[in-house]
Image 1 (spheres, rainbow, N blue to C red):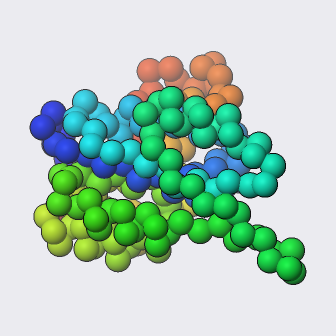
Image 2: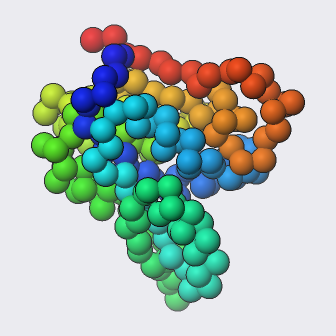
Length: 184
């Protein structure tokens, strides 16, 4: 897929999905700086939003500060704790509403998630003539979502670049992220 400098890009990060995927697959944290850089790909960034969950302990505050330092705006929700002890934190609807609100300001929507709940959103955005790119861990990404988007970056294909804590000696330092494209 051709990327050019005049494309207006919006980046929408499902932070919980990325955190849990990286932790489950590799017991590592995600390098959001490199994801942000590769998502922009020398194009015009209009907005980059990370959907985050705040806990009572506020132990995530340094992480939030790191995201804002990169240039990523935060949308915050508090973690909901039920009497049963169950916890819930879900930003899917909020993220989808923001994409729908901004679709006319953007040429490219970059979703950073593997959540298949976003398939209808992707189809809607494409019906409006926009390009949808996906950044995710292939192993934890919904197959239909991968098939639906116009292009994708598999974070697992270059762990050294996209994960904090992988050494250069463990991977080929010249390895570039693997990008797949859907043919129209």
